[in-house]
Image (tube, rainbow over the protein chains, first blue to last red):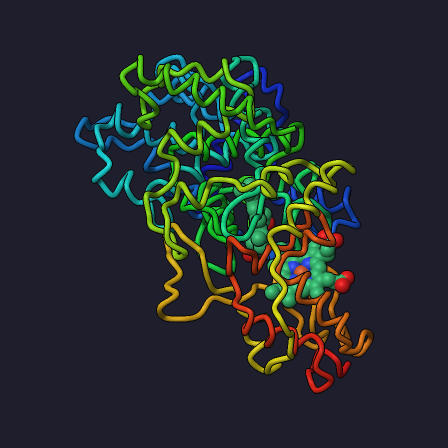
Length: 281
Length: 229
């Protein structure tokens, strides 16, 4: 089913020269390399079953569906998303996902991937927040997750490389670092309470260590099919889940706190190849 | 690290900027008129949390708003760094922790079965897309997320040390009872800036003294499965 997307890529790669972030690689190859390079990482090796399932990752089905949605003429304005600029120019998707969040001149601020996608669906296609196309953010059946998985897949194997040239990009990343270590909420947690040491477990889950970039690249490689939830999930969904467990207040998407956290966590995986889409517990 | 005064000054500064700009803060699609590069990273983090609508406007289980939940107290502020606190910070945190601890007149062990249930429960205080309703179920202690109590149960956490045979190794002297009560109530008295939450201080009661007595029984009672490994 997803062969079409895979075949289209080499052509796209040849056209979109200067992929300094590295070559596109199949997500399973990226994972296998990480596993080989890190034989002692409990986090990376925690689920033999998921490693075995990776070539048949159910998230790959969403790549196909997302591709159709991306090129379809949709919304009140009946246009495709080919006019959407994710930072590499309108419709240029290779390498775009691993170079976000970034500052966009047209809005005068830093946007993370999902914010940008929603922005384009509203501005170009004319959807409003009331339309389920943009209102429904989670679940494999949602347009947002299909589009996210297709677009992210175009950066598989490329290194995380969120730009920091613009002062607002740097400010976002630095605020994200403060937020990562900011203790608060009903149980005094910060992100490092659970992601500060290697090989620690919360119940049956082995947790990734943020300062180990080879663990962290897998940690932030969303979209990923979550076997336990039988759904493809996003970076936003993961942040919402962790903030909820932290007993902070309920975090909202398309907001600066969310974007700052993503700016920092993608930066913490800088230089390491992304697994897009991944498969997680 | 975290300079309270600098933050207060920064907050005042952007408050006036926001006022001047007609409060045009982030609305999700347009850039804001606040210059985010003019603030320190600490100021910007506070600004993002409190002034940009990043959190749901909800009432918390303990009463109060999302804003109260997100406002740091002194120990949270002092411990918001990467890695371990330096000596000065550690001393300050221990002193603050001692000041906010109230020793009960007497400490007795409760019912270890109830304690096991509380230690095993991760319910409580979660807010957002899904809210824990404390009217339906009492909040637990989350202990199993971080500690192994019984090695026969495979799904327990390792963020904290294993507590297997905790009582068998220590006994139930008055000194042990006092220590364990102090650690559960406010662990920063012994482990400044520990990852372990404070469960009972003068400002906060995640667990009542009675609930703590049950959990202590789970840890210390010779009959408890914790002590029969």
